[in-house]
Image (cartoon, rainbow, N blue to C red; front, top):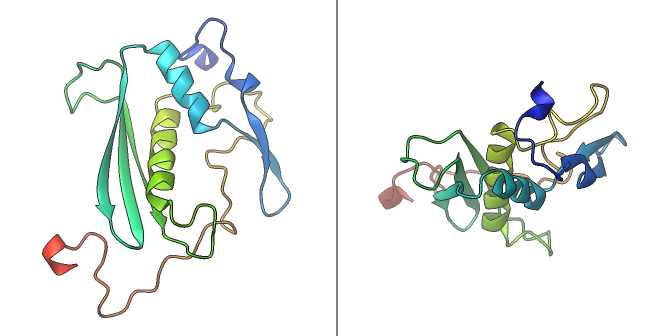
Length: 159
């Protein structure tokens, strides 16, 4: 029954899933955010995904994403929302400076998965599924806080 949720004729999310391996060598299936978005658009051509920057500074980005089934839905009438944060990582030449983009993509992917546009209801019960393609060993450490570094949720005049 749950595997009928958000079903779109001619679209099978498992056809777009890829296998990922974690730091321990365990493999699982992952549906990239671009395919979650495509699935959402196919199922809800009038839907919308709204993103909001909650915090963005030289080291941290926090993004909220909300999923609406119709573009005319009021702000509080979303079906799911999610937050994501990413830290700047100068040691990562490919993605370290793109932490805002990475946080946005992660927030959208989580919100879509929460709305049912993920693999959680598509796979066989014994399949291992992943919500995120990154393992903890791949994620940068957050910057160290000191007495001159205010928390990310501090008022702007205190940052």
